[in-house]
Length: 174
Image (cartoon, rainbow, N blue to C red):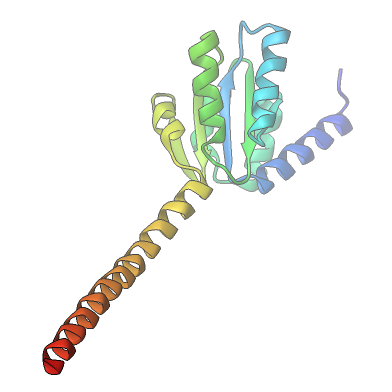
């Protein structure tokens, strides 16, 4: 049985994880075997996601300390696992969607991403979100596209002008 000082240390650990994360996902892991939990943790690690199991009362205390997590309070029931992520905010959703498709567990309950609440029925939308690198690539492609078009246009026009000048010069020699 954890002592009061043990519980305080766990609340401090959770508070630090919440402060360092831009998103937290809640899953209900009831009915999952130890092997399944280990496999799921491994898949989360591959996506640079920390997945931990905490007592709901301790995570609520940490959330109360920080504030802004009230939308998640109704989901702090049953046996929950918590996925914390700093950068690729859709990574846990992608892992969960694939794992649930394969094993039919765990149950996605809710997420709080950059202060926005996402409910159980929004997992597919979260999984479809592009990663930060994909969005940056799209933006770079859009920014480079007009420049490429201008350069191509100038080269084409330059070729036409040079051809026209050459034709006029040849006619002048005749």
